[in-house]
Image: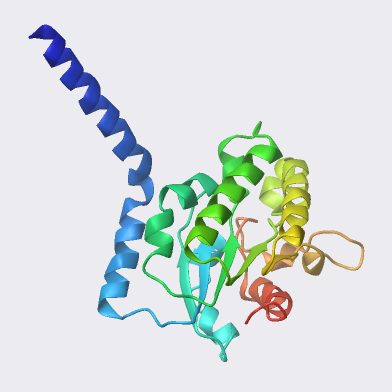
Length: 218
């Protein structure tokens, strides 16, 4: 009897741990589901998936008035979260293009994290996308160099380089580099493109992204 009880406890704690792991963004995913129930997602849209740089771009449609966009960014998310919620982020939609922005928070959570780990996390998510959408355009926006996370720039630069190389070899895939466009004439990151926290973008910052992204958007 004690063995059965012990086994039950182990199973209970294992399930609880698994649920706790995902609970941070569970409500965000439920909000997406509710939005999809209230308004059927349009077909052949451009699906944005990623972290807070997309989440806070609440008026993204106004930057691309000739595009149909579904924004499924959820703030604070990491590549691991995109993988955890891949089914919820992909299955409800029939997009013609997916654009991903994620990676900052992986390093913010663990300053010692190696670039290759984040690259592998991205490749895992990319594979999940291709299993469902083998032929559509899939693009990755380079990790931006936020002044508040300057200590992490070396890992971010390496990650960008490796993902760019990977995407170059993939069909119907592009690496969208926004880092150069966010620099001034001296090659320094423009701090005026960031709000006070030096992490998230101002409207002007999103205008810079728009100028780069529009050349890749279907």
